[in-house]
Each structure stands twice: as C-alpha cells, then as structure tokens.
Image (cartoon, rainbow, N blue to C red; front, side):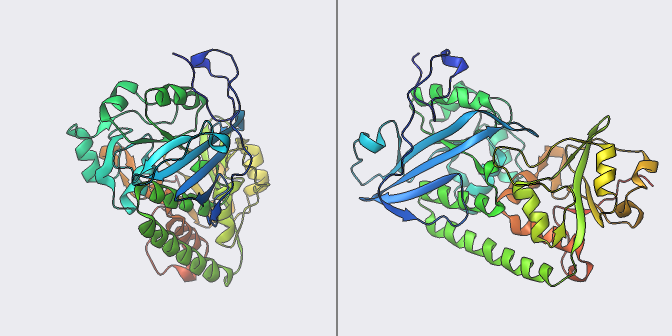
Length: 392
C-alpha cells in the first residue's frame, strides 16, 4: 500500500524510510474564527466552509518532542455545500463533511467532549471499557460501540475501526505509533482529526478543543456556551485566589527507586500558578516538553521541602513509605498533603480525572484553590482531595 501524505513529511516506519512531500504551512486566506486560547490549531472561514490548520510536536511521556513537528490541514464543508477543489493551498488537505454523525475516538477525554456536546449517541467506536460514563461503558460492553484500543502507546485496531464505519476518527497523537498509522487509516477512507490537546501550553486551550469538535458536529452553540461557562468560572476562582496570601505548592508523585515526577511547566504548572500558588520546581513553559520531568529524592527535598502544600499522589503513583524522608517536608509535617484520586470507579478502572477534568480546568483549579487557601473551602473537593493514604 502506498503511503498517504502525513503532516510535515514524517518518515514512516510502516511505509518505509522515504520522505513524503511537505504539506504547505503558509496561512490560508479567509476570515479568522476566534479561538481565544488554542495554540495548536487555527481556524478560518471562507466561501461557506472552514479550514483548520493543526500543528504540534509528538512529546514523549515525561520527556521531550520526538521526530519532526506534525501538521494537518482540514477542510470542514457542510453537507449541503459543494466542496472546493483540493488544490492550491488546499492540496493534500483532508476533506470532512459536516456535521459528522458517526464518530470514532481513541482517548477517554474525547468522550467527555462528546458528552458535554450531547452527542455521545454518535460514538461508534471508542478505546475500550474504561469509560467513566456508565451508559457509554455499558454500550461498549454490549457490543453496540466498537473497541479500537486506547491511543496511549498503540494505534487503533483497524478491523474494529473499519467495522464501525465512522465519518471521522478523533485521534490523540501522543505516540509515534499513531503517527505511523495515520496514513494507513486515511488510505482506508477514514478522515483523521489529530488531537493535540495535551500540547496546549494554557489549560484553557484544551477548552477550545470542545469548540473545534463542536464545529465538526454542528454543535457550535453548545460548545460556545460550555467554553463561556468554564471561562467565567476560571476568572472567578483566579480573582478569589489572588485576594489570598500566596502559598507555595509542589505537585510530585513517586515513580520508583529514587525518582519523582514533579509538575514543572505548561498547562499543569499554570493551574498551580493561577491558584496563587508558588511552585519552587517551576521552569519555563516549553510546548516541546511534557509538563513533568523526573527528579531525584535529593533534588525534591532541596527545592520542595519548604512548600506549604503537596499534591503527593495520583493514579500512577507507587506507594512511598519512607516516613523519615516525608518528615523533611513542611507539607507533610503540617498536614497539607493531597492526592489526585477523586472521581474514580475502581471496578471499571475508570478515572474522571482523565476524562471530564481534562476539559473542565475550572473544576481542577477549584480544588487547588481550596487546597491552598482554607478560607475558600466553601465547596467539597472533587478531583484533588486530602490524602488519606499517606503513612504516619
């Protein structure tokens, strides 16, 4: 099978080492459609249709960018509009007729987006049965929705994807295996919308992805209303936090041996900062790096021992039982230890932190604000809550 053109001429293992022609990246003419926060895509409108340019790096988990920067141009054309010729600045672009009615997805937070837009009934394929949504999970278990595999480290299962007959595949591109699979999927006649949500340096850029999927699905009004609500909530929380004294905070979970994974940059670091928290491990934002890096216990103590609060655990954490080391941290001694372990369904291995929370930074920010500023604890914790498992 001949390779289809993919993003910015990535050399594909699946198709050999021959480099592919680059997709043009010059700005296309048209009226900009405002996306207040997104940095990984831009939208213009012209002659009754939309053009979406998507551009980002594939960043390894806890590491840096892998391979070349990726680029994709989408042309979203209503079904009642004659599509333009895919020539000139639209050459090699992907044509998608809107609204899309049959949607495949390889990542949990896509399901949160379709849910807030009221189109979960359009999902014909998802990653698997780890959905936090009981109704959707049961549909998957009954075989009404196909399972194509989650996109963390592997591409979609093609037989199940083809059988689901989707109008479009929402495909998170967090691994080069997915990059390599993209041209094969497109060659089968399935348009791919790459999702670079995790590359957004501002957590509000993730909310703009709801607006992008709203354009695909014909639910722009619902998407705009959702984004406006989240924006208002975030603004209110930031103002309330700014009126409180600044407190220091670290967010670092234990991996194994002598290694911890602290939040350093990008969207996750901005959440701590906007809660009026000072992160002693913070570094410059960099879209070509993940939000965290591994550090030694010695470095964590040197830089974070005096932090007022500590988000110590999440679902990836191994247990850390060295009480003598923990006692060196002010947050441990004074009892301001928190864990990102709320909104879980252990029987389903489902975590809403990786679904709804991704597109509801206002809810996560609210937890951090309440963690750092006790006078503002007027609502229950949701995702980040007091750690009840820390050894004493």
